[in-house]
Amino acid sequence: MENFHPFVLPFVLGTFALFAICIYKYVRWIRQFDRLQRAIILKNIFSVKLLPAIWEMFTECLLHLRISKKNWRLGYMHRSIAFGWFLLIVVGAVESRIGTPKNFHFWVAIFYRYFHQAPPESHTAFVFTQVMDLLLLYVLSGITLAFIKKIHSRILGMKRATKHTLMDRAVRTALWSIFPLRLLSESVSACLYHNGGFLTQTIGDLFSPNVAQFLEMPFWSLYSIALCVFFLLLPFTRYMHIFTEIFLIYFRKLGVKERVKMTGFTKFELSACSRCGMCIDGCPLYKDLGIMDVQSVYLLRNLRNLEHHKDIVEAGKNCLMCSRCSEDCPVDIDLMSIRRISRDKGDLDTDGNYQYLQKVKSFNSIGRVAYFGGCMTQLTPAISSAMEEIFNAVGQKYWFMDKEKSICCGRPLAQQGFNKQAAELRRKNTELIHSSGATALVTSCPICYNAFKNEYQLHIPVYHHTEYLDQLIKSGKLKVSKGDLKVTYHDPCELGRSCGIYKEPRNVLKAVATLLKTENEKEKSLCCGMNLGNTVITLEQQTILRNSALDNLTAPNPDVVVTACPMCKRAFQHGGTSVQVKDIAEVVAAATKKE
Image (cartoon, rainbow, N blue to C red):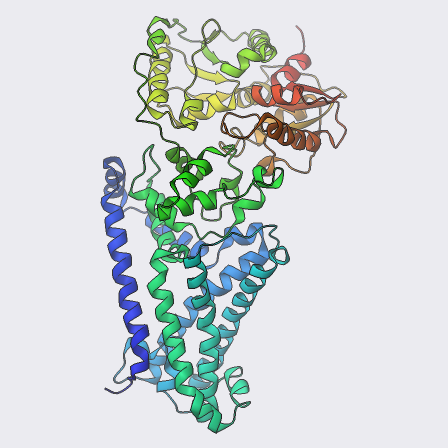
C-alpha cells in the first residue's frame, strides 16, 4: 500500500480505540440522564443555544480564556498545547491533502514528513513547511512550561500543584513525549531529504546522514507509539477532559443542571475536570490551615475513579461550601452541587421529625412584604430589629414570617446531604408563603436567600435585604444621611460567590458612609469560617479562618466592619477586635432620617 508503513499501526489502533471507548462512555452517560435532563435536551437540541455553545467551546476548550484571565502564564501553557495541537492537526491535514492528492490516508497528515520526502519547491509548500514548524515550536513552549510547573509550580503562579495518580502521570509522560519525538522524527527526515522548515531543518543539519538514517525509523516508531499510549490511556485519566468539556458546555448551554442525585450529567462534569489545581490555592482550608487532599480537584478525582470510598466521604464532608473553588474553576463545574451529592444521606429515615410544621399557621399578608429573618438572625436580633425599623420608616406593611416560631429554609440540611428533609421544609415554607398572599419576600440571611431564590419555586420576587435597601434608597422612599463613618464590607460567601450580589451592598454603604477597599473582597472574599458547610474542622481551626478574614477587614482601620450575613456578624463579633461589627441593615437604620 502506498503511503503506508507498519510503524503507523500503533497510532491507527490507538485512534480507533480512543473513539470507540469515548463513544461507549458518552452513550452510557447520556442514558443515565434523568427524565428532566433528557426533556431539556430534546426541547433545546436544535435551538439557537447551539451558537453560544460553539463559541464557548472555541474560547474555553482551545483558547482557555477563563484560565488566562486568572493567570496568564497558565493560560498560555494550556492554550499553546490545546490550540497549538489543534492547529497542527488542521493545518497538517490541509498541507497533506494538497501535497498528497492521491492515495491519501488519515495517518499521512500525522507522519507527513516521512511519506512526503520532496523538498518544498513551490511557494505554498514552503509556507506550509514554515508554519508547521512554527506551530510545533508553539506547542513545545507549552510542554516546557508544563514541565517547569511540575518542578516548581510557583514560577507559573501556583503555590501548590495537584498530586496526580500513577495512571495520570503515565499518560502525562506520553503526552510530553509526543511533540519532542515529532520534532526529532521530522528533523532526522529533514537531514535525509531536506524537506524541513526553519526549526526541523536547522536541527536536522546537526545530524550526519548516516546517523539520521539509523535513527529515522526508531524515532518515527516511538512517535507513533507515544500517540498510541496517550490515546489508549486518555479515556481513563484526567485527559478525558479534552473531549468531555465540549459536551459539558453544550449540555450546560441547553439548560441541563445538576440534580440532588448523581446522574449521567454528573459523570460529564467529573470527567471535564482537568485537575489543573486552580481550586487549591484559594481554598481557605489549604491557605490558612494547610489541609490537603480534600479540595474539589481530589473529590472529583476519587468520585470519577470510584476509589477510596473513605477519601470520598472525608473530602466530601471537609469543606466550607464557601464556593471559592467554584469561582476559581476554569471549566465552571458545579462543584458545590457535586459535593452535596457526595454527602447524600437520602437513605436515613427521619419520618415524623417534622410533624411540628403542621402546627405552623400562615398569615394573611395580602399586599405586604413577607420578611424571613432566618435561624441565625434569631441569634442576632439587632438585624431583624433594624429591618423592622426600616420597614416602618418607609411605611411598608410586612409579615415577619419566622418571628414566633422559626422554620429553617432547608438549605443547611441540603448542604449536609439531607435532601429529603430539606425538601419537606421547602414544601411547608412554600405553602405558607403562597397562602399568605405576600407580594415579595425579603430575607436577611444569605443562606436563606440562596435557598428561596434558587431552590424554591416561588411565584413572587425574592430579595436579600441588601437588594431591598438599595431599591429603597435609589427610589427615594428611604431617606438616609451620609456621615463620617468609615467602613469595610465583608462579602458573605452565599451572597457573593453563590448569588453574585456585590454591587447592591456597596451602593447602600456608599450612600451612608465612606467605603474602604480591602485586599480580599468580592469574588476573593474570605470565608468567616463559622458557616454550616463544614462539620469536620475544629473550633480552633474555625477561629484561624475567622481571624484571617477579620484581619483582612480591619487592615484599612475602619470605624465599623460591615457584613450582610448574621452568621458572619456573629463570627466576627467574637473575634476580639476593638472595631465594631454590624450588619448593613443596622448601619442603614442608624443613618435613616427621622421624619
